[in-house]
Image (cartoon, rainbow, N blue to C red):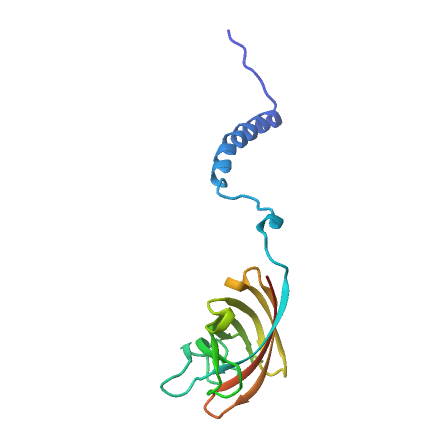
Length: 193
């Protein structure tokens, strides 16, 4: 009569774990074969610099040429318009007047996220259309407490001349009218190559 081979449960669990983990190694190795570590110093990037942009963000919600459109209405019509979402294609100008030279667009969205206070989630690209920075963008994402005199939001990346960009944007209300149109002064400090 044959004898049964007895293995303790802990050895059996270890054996099963070993077999399955060994069997998955080639799968994981193949799955991540498209990832490679890059030596940052060998990328030959120029020296980092800080650039200050003073721009005026023209948010036009009225009239037939609105640049900011509400795509989701607020939960209720009382302030602070909680739940409202606007898509924007706002002009970035060098001066506060709409007739000032346009050097780019602020494209993205803002959403009213405060139930009891007027705060917005800003998600937008500052896309430049003029001069040296034409075709380059940097991205602003953050909380905008619109009742504060100055609001700070992070700059989290970019493209073109703003690859690897980081920094911050300071926003302050320059003017507003009874139609809801607003001009915001943005002072952006961008670290880039």
